[in-house]
Image 1 (tube, rainbow, N blue to C red):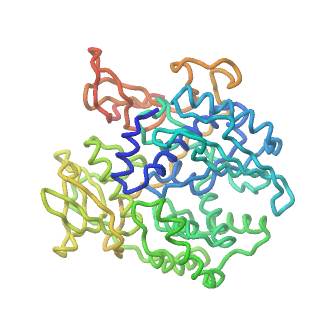
Image 2 (cartoon, rainbow, N blue to C red):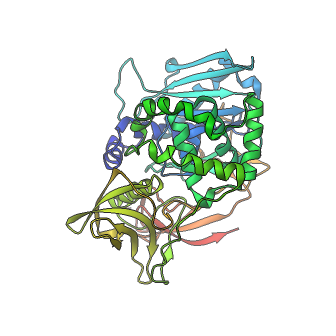
Image 3 (cartoon, helix red, strand yellow):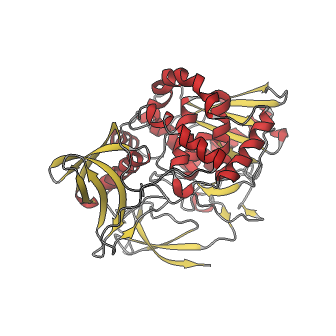
Length: 472
């Protein structure tokens, strides 16, 4: 288990409660346990807001629950769930030290509105910062087996930006991006909660990942038909404006480094429905042209060869850009208020942030290694250039016909070196440590390195590597 200092430092940098970050950490390992369990790996399909955060967009609102559609209805059974989660808890504990005591696991089976069984579970945990005692924080599970899955699920790498990330990553079987988007629009129509509005507009704003409106509308129609509701229109949401405003801070503030105003999302709804219903593309500003010899950086997992603090500041800046919020940037001894737009690598290998300096009223660029601090403000901005700090879009792992696991969960626990499950059919990525030059093989593209020793056997403190080879 990681040290509590790592959780606290991350929370401090992002402006979040440490318990929110700790839960995100635990969610990653719970997903690891679920998708390394023979009985669950191919029949549990990850969905919902946490899926968006953990599988599609690393810089996103933090979430608290795990939602799944189960393709095997027999799994909606309290005894079965208790059995598998005791096994998952034991394995996660052996791997990390996170405690998930069986006495703090509950599974309530109930009938959903369609008269079919569903389950709400709660998994208690003892993490790096949660207090010991009779009360434990819990992860909520929402399980249903009668949802209509319109598109084939995708196998996706899970974002787990902590120092104990598994060597071969965490892989989840999740809703396809178009389905995750459609499900959020359906949820916005059916329950009109602040987090649904936040999610829908964030997905819509990510232009490079935006699906064709006809595809999203087709998925949405099937989702709404199954739920017995009509496809939503803007007029259907307008009566709920007051409810959204009333719950905006209560339901979202603790999940975000800074809370954008409701208007910044509500006012985008007309553009969203014009695009969805009539294919009218909103007017988007052009990208900043720069000098012409710069390389745009839009990695899905933003791991760059910079210091740990600079990495944290970049995450704050990327969050602000996706939410159209200004940033107070501490740079070379003074503070600037900026609109962030893009990261680029120059010919001399410097990484720079392109932004609009509001104090000077002009475009400026800032070397990332000279940034001394970053803080999100609640001041919104209308982009002057295309926002290029968000990743280019979701990346799926090629589906495999056989999922190789070295041994069933039910047998004796393995040593750490033999615990990892493998996924056949994909390339091997070779990364070289930026600090010591040691090379590592990876099943997924991630520049983050675990603690290791250099070629002479001494500890190396390099945390990032460069991709040097891809083997098929």
